Length: 131
Image (tube, rainbow, N blue to C red):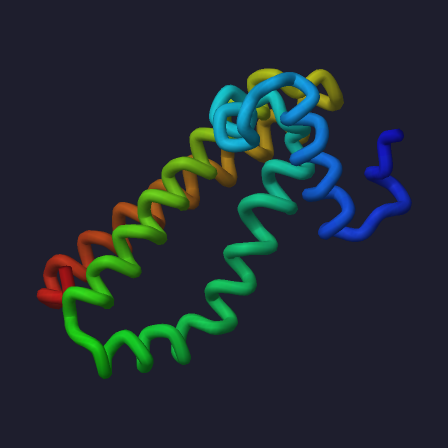
């Protein structure tokens, strides 16, 4: 019951949860080990949530500013942890990818570029005294 061509993103993610359960692993472990398909790992679990978070980021940060600087630091740390986890998951999924070599290479290039951007962003936040 593969549904990758005719399914929306929500259906694809639900399918991934079912597949991971059938393998008796949590989706988190399955992602970390690169056992999930590269396309769903990259698009479904990294890019889609990233777009959603970036779209709502100003509202989230304004709300957290009202609470405290610690809340902002906590939010940023969660984003960093999630980003590193997902970038490693994408890298591992690319290692296991059986399709065209171009997608394997492009996924790893994106991971390296996003990791470099993450380091630059963290450095900027540290210099600004935010974290």
